[in-house]
Each structure stands twice: as structure tokens, then as C-alpha cells.
Image (tube, rainbow, N blue to C red; front, side, top):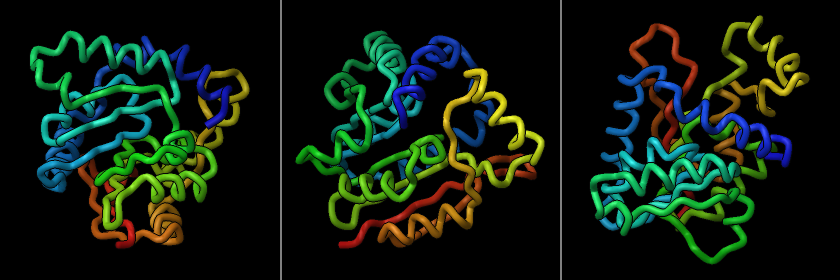
Length: 215
């Protein structure tokens, strides 16, 4: 992500935080499946955590959970939510930090699970982002992604995105299909163990992908 994208998300943070989850049922299914995949004692990293909605619901399943985002404003809101949480144990497990995968990959820490919800299509250089994610994972660790595949949505919407970007109404995005995303994940050295769709709607263009790093 670029500095321009950081500014976009900083500006959008408060409005984003106030918006409702578009498909609460699908979100609940996603979180439930992540819990099933999280072993005891897991070290979890979430990239592009936004205002911490998923992190606050998942952190109790992990030994430690780091939520990160390029936007300092998003992270500030996430920290506010954590401070207001009734479960004091969350403060021992969950941390939020403004950071990118590229920054984190230069540090010695590694994780058992890396999560990216609505993230990978916004990450910029896809091969580089996936390489950073692989570097962040312990051998055999899981990368779990659920992200919009812009290449499968209504063509009129796809055509509108560059116009919105021109006027600062949309961030940089990578147009993917589910197939091209899976191909990129495999090319980065992962093996895909699961692809599922959690929406109750007939058309779902946000595949839930579980990929394992090499041992």
C-alpha cells in the first residue's frame, strides 16, 4: 500500500468504524471457521485489521494476537475499542499496531496464523505481499484470506473504480478472480487446503481460502 492509500484510510476511518457489517451471518461463519483452525497456544497476526472488529472477537482463541493496519487512525479506533472491552483478559492477549506486512517481515517474530480479511486486494504488489506473509509464518503455519475478488463483480462497478480513485473516493485495488488469487498463493509456495464461501447470498465473490506454508 502507498502513502496515498494510508491517507485515504486515515480519512475514512471514523466513517468506516460507524458502518454496519454488510453480511453479519457470513462474518459469523468466517470467525467460527477461524476459531476451528486456531490451535491452542497460537500466535496470530492480522493484517489490515481496520478498527479491530474481527480481532476483538477472535483474540480469546489465541495465545497472542497482533492486529495491524497501515492506517494509524484505524488503529487508534481499535485501541479505543480494546480499552472499552469488558473482558480484561483481552488486554493481555491482544495488541494493535500501525504496521505493514513489509515492515513486520523485517522483524524476528513469526506467527502460527496470518489473517487477511478484506486485505489482499488492497495490499498492492501481490507477489511481494504474499512473500512477506510467507516470511511472517512459522513453518507449516496458516495464511487465511477472505477478500473481494474484484474481477468477478459487475463490470460497471469495475469501470467505476478508476473514476472513484481519480476523485479520492476509492483506494488502490488489485483486480483478482478466485482462480487468479489461488494461483498467486500457490506461486508463493503455499498449498491451498480449503476454499469456501460463507455468504448466504447466491453470488459470493469473497472466497475464504486456507493456505499452508511449507514445513
